[in-house]
Length: 226
Image (tube, rainbow, N blue to C red):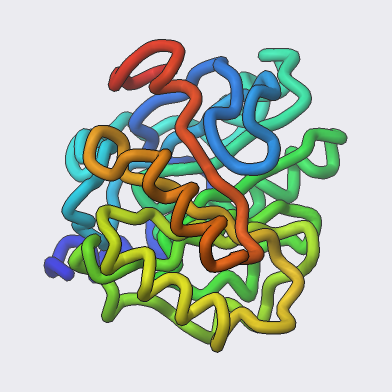
């Protein structure tokens, strides 16, 4: 982690957020794929995954008032809001943002890279927790205690680049996730691992997991803001 990110961790004023973009689309992944959703994408990330499709969040961003971000999300009319990044949990204002949106009756999803503690996240928020496989280059950054904090409404996502990643994820599922309640998603890296190969491995192993495709890339291609 750079000195700048060390300073940024948990930082920023409580009344504003540094954002990369906000937009209306449909949820592209998770068990809620296809549902209309307002996205709040934060700027900055403490990880550098080899297959990252959001590297534009590493720098830049626009600081916006907390109240403005809440109002915009509610005015979108979307029944669901996803807070993603970057890494949202780098900014302290993300926590009250999600709580405020829950208070307003929205279904709120948090997409987090899994390296930071999720303890303070409002329990009403659906936490989609990435577990970083070896192919990401960030395997050592997994904060394993997070797994014990997940509930039946939460989801664990493995992004897989190859067979080695699959076998690693299979072992984690059978050891660290055995008996735990969250849904398990297996997501092939778009354009690198064929979905049909992943499906065949899952069926062969009778793996208690769910195929997770990025349907926004099927619809619009590899673009941002969709």
